[in-house]
Amino acid sequence: MTATTPVDTSSSTAFREASRRRTFAVISHPDAGKSTLTEALALHAKVISEAGAVHGKAGRRGVVSDWMEMEQSRGISITSAALQFAYGDAVINLLDTPGHADFSEDTYRVLSAVDCAVMLLDAAKGLEPQTLKLFDVCRHRGIPVITFINKWDRPGRDALDLCEEIKQRIDLEPMPLTWPVGEAGRFRGVLDRADGSFIRYTRTAGGATAAPEERIEPARALDEEGEDWTHAVESAELIDISGGEFDVAKFFDATGTPVLFGSGVLNFGVRHLLDLIVALAPRPTPRIGVDGTSRSLDAPFSGFVFKVQTGMDKAHRDQVAFARVCSGVFERGMVVTNATTGKPFATKYAQQVFGRERTTLDVAYPGDVIGLINASALRVGDTLHAGKPAVRFPGLPSFAPEHFAVAYPADLSRAKQFRKGVDQLAQEGVVQVLSSERRGDGTPVFGAVGPMQFEVAVHRLLAEFGCQVKLDHLPYKMVRKLGDPKQRATTNLGNRGEYFTRADGTELVVFTDQTALNVTLRLNEGFLLEPLVAGT
Ligand code: GDP
Image (cartoon, rainbow, N blue to C red; front, side, top):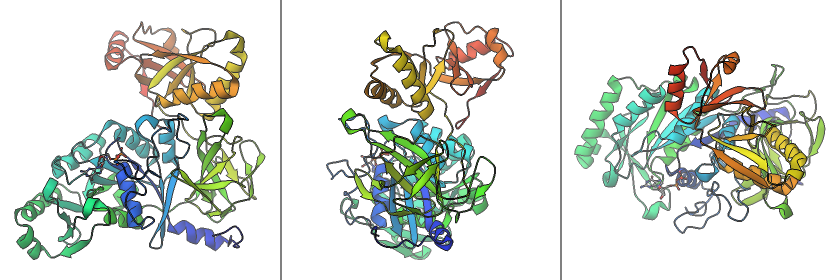
């Protein structure tokens, strides 16, 4: 649509467009195959005609889904955001969850902007640490999860064993919709548990085109696949015995997860996944404001900022704020109100950011993500709205930090600017700013989910506040919340840990490792520690 095309902003349009949206993110551990799957999904939806246009690895043309690698010259990718494509009548928004070196608090925050998550597991590895952390956030927020067990074309673990792990470790009932037939080099397709038929996939050169598939009756499947088919039928029966029946209510209340098996690299099972997202993923629903009232999807435009990225290069100050649309029709050029500051914000520069490519975005609906450039006035958690009534959505939560470092200005004559900068970064959620009696004199300790947050903080303090910063990394790895802050005065941690107060007032205690935590509990009967729940 061009800027001159009139946009239908009637309320029925907002409803209709919202009901077509499916907004989700992939949660996975690095190397499970997220980029490859993203490419395969886009391929199926035919936004690209040739696999590789999206993927940046293995010598393929890198354009989009190498989202998460830090851009070498700038120290940070300024491009990560959302991929949007049409699939049939649906519009899919796939939000990136930066992993690898870019893993940070932002990765968690992306989950506040989705309606569903796809948990991608490597068949040889099952649940891995980063997946578990991201899953915790989904559970805390009640986000329904679809599971895709990937890399079935390679030797991996037993399908039953993987389902058992999901059940035991994260107390989520696996509800397999398909079951793999053959494994590794003999992976040929899946048994469709809905009707017992065999879906056979055909390999294509390098997985470069959508894998053709054929639906085959069980009798013929037995004839043609022999033992692999028998084995699949038998082991799928074992899942039947232990439950695992698909129940949509369990998916919606996030106690059960539909499971699919496939191979992103071969495009096996990818169509099934897309169809499932369209069929099952919740449509955007009205978001509830801080005053407890929900903003109807057809109310005037509203949205909230879930991520802000600042270019690291002073000469190219380029701040992009990513907002999820919650209600109404967004049109580029609108002047909206920032509910946090009460100030107007002009959206002349709204963009859709697709990897390194940006296209101007003219209109967006509930569930979509808009990238607002030149957005130096916007902060993570800000609410934007047009028209009346005004609305303010809850701010975004903080997450349990896992990395800690004391920060000092290298030049003490810049101490004032340093303080100002640190306050600013705390407000924006770039790092968590903690104080400790042990550090004295207001020397801040930075807390982060991923070490990249420290780099961003150091760069910004220099670029924007003229402060060279020295970081002294601390050895702590575990954080808990104090159950009874009064115990702080009476419980000596020795060199096993330290007390911190976060800028929001939360009283924390950190330990070097699990042993240090255990020893402290043993030496101090009745010392109350609470998990720092993801999202508090
Ligand atoms: P990410 O780190 O999760 O984005 O993972 P990538 O998509 O970059 O994949 C990591 C590696 O696993 C790459 O070498 C991929 O080619 C490979 N890979 C991804 N999906 C599959 C799959 O289904 N089967 C096999 N055999 N390899 C895969």
